[in-house]
Length: 150
Image 1 (cartoon, helix red, strand yellow):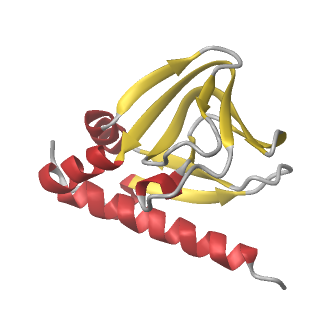
Image 2 (cartoon, rainbow, N blue to C red; image 1 turned 30 degrees about the horizontal axis):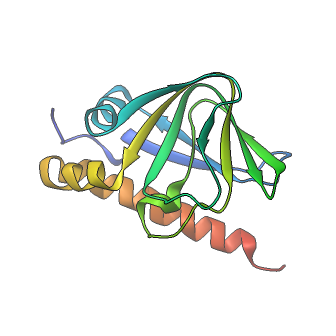
């Protein structure tokens, strides 16, 4: 797999929409998606099935391929994550329990990238890992900016 791709191979835009759960929309070109698939794992969930529960260990990020995922906090729905959007970004960066639950809405296919997968990416495809870290840093900076009082 060639790593001499442009920085535009992985682009993210911040989405807030009507729900109170901001999430990232990923625009991965074919090479970037192939790289993520190589180091991640595709997982399928049925309607209502829990992806993870609040308080569970956090060690991965999820990219929605098909379907939608509901995000819940304290038993209340706070948003839905549609295809090509991600959730659980902090799971790659820190050891802290999940702050909310994620549940499949209909049949869902996700791509999960764990910390271990990211370490393998760092070793075998460092340019892709650097791009991912850049995207995560930008998304966290945007999140912090948006959470500041006006």
